[in-house]
Length: 499
Ligand SMILES: Cc1cc2nc3c(=O)[nH]c(=O)nc-3n(C[C@H](O)[C@H](O)[C@H](O)COP(=O)(O)OP(=O)(O)OC[C@H]3O[C@@H](n4cnc5c(N)ncnc54)[C@H](O)[C@@H]3O)c2cc1C
Image 1 (cartoon, helix red, strand yellow):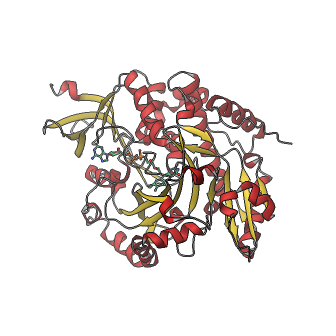
Image 2 (cartoon, protein in one colour):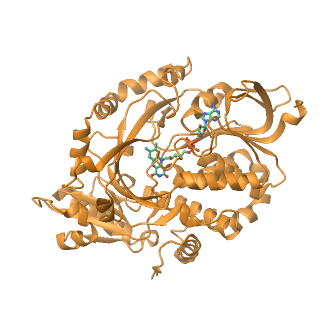
């Protein structure tokens, strides 16, 4: 192949849900652009986006207690919950557009309706949950949420969790039926099939080794073809680094000023997966509890009904832990290799500040299986260890950067880092993650292609009617969108109404 043939408009590094989403948006907005994808593994969606590597929660802040914090006066701040919910609605609209346009099929293979519930015990926690319910249920986005502290009702809602439970302190739950379980692995694979049909060149077993700016302003990506052992050089006008946990080291190679003073802190995960069909059948919800004191938000325990390979499963976790790898298939040298002269102070500051977190994660790694089952018994008092196996989840690399809150501050969200001229962007961080992929990739478009946004806006609005509009402030539009996406994606048939 000549160098000329290796020139393209767009290179996407990594075949996870983020590259899949960006590629699908770009193919709709600029169908004539040539796109190439380089993925080091043999298939799409094999790292964090894989169904066994994440919890599959369609994060819409319906049940995750860490998105609603208690203010000093006891009232509940729901602003973050509203933001996350609105972001999830963007994903639902884009997925519906793809289904309605026959670009992807059989939505039930990647999204299923499942009640989202929060469960707490203890007087203080019950008061918090009740206040949270009062604040959220007034909001159009959280219509249909129910609260109960009546044990009889809870037995009806949560038979497996209530069986054998000693009720020596108050207990309460909220339930909302419009929650979802999303198989992000299946979705990623469907999106890559669609991209292949659109003539996107997808190169599996191609690992990106280096990236640098050429004298004519393009980006040159050096790729190792794992099968042939050869090194290829490809150039593009725009590069997206969607390499999951490995995005940080690739971003560092670009040398752009925006890549400096940023570090990454890897957090590993484990799930317990139930192997007893009788137990699996007794539960039908995603149930989120409250994080233990000192535990990071991503380690909030939850008991999840999942749909994987068209089969109902039951998972508990994730148990967070520490591993120096940036990907599940990464290397033990990833963390140390990411420490550079420009971020060493940021990393050291974070190390000093986050001693409690490090200690917590190390304790989690050292948990014995019996200890993990004990944690599970806080959810399922009668859980038997022989009914549960362990699966290793994906790696999450949390961003560390200098913020107004101080040097070396650990971030729990996702972060788009882009060059000032918009020629390259990377996605760092992992939460709320895949659920908000459409929102985050629209942010990439806004940051990197401002000159095209005016021309693209009508198509974006056709695909995602609430783009640029607050659904909270437009309840009628929310109801319309909620009902049409639910119908297209085969979700809850319950009609919401808002007065
Ligand atoms: C334990 C856990 C639970 C989670 N739960 C949820 C949840 O319930 N809901 C939710 O919405 N999100 C959840 N997430 C987050 C979600 O999984 C991620 O945000 C999302 O999958 C990230 O997608 P990605 O495309 O950025 O990365 P990935 O899916 O990791 O894809 C990156 C790809 O890049 C490839 N790659 C890496 N380096 C190179 C290279 N040098 N050359 C070529 N290719 C490369 C990798 O092989 C991989 O295929 C969870 C994550 C974890 C770990």
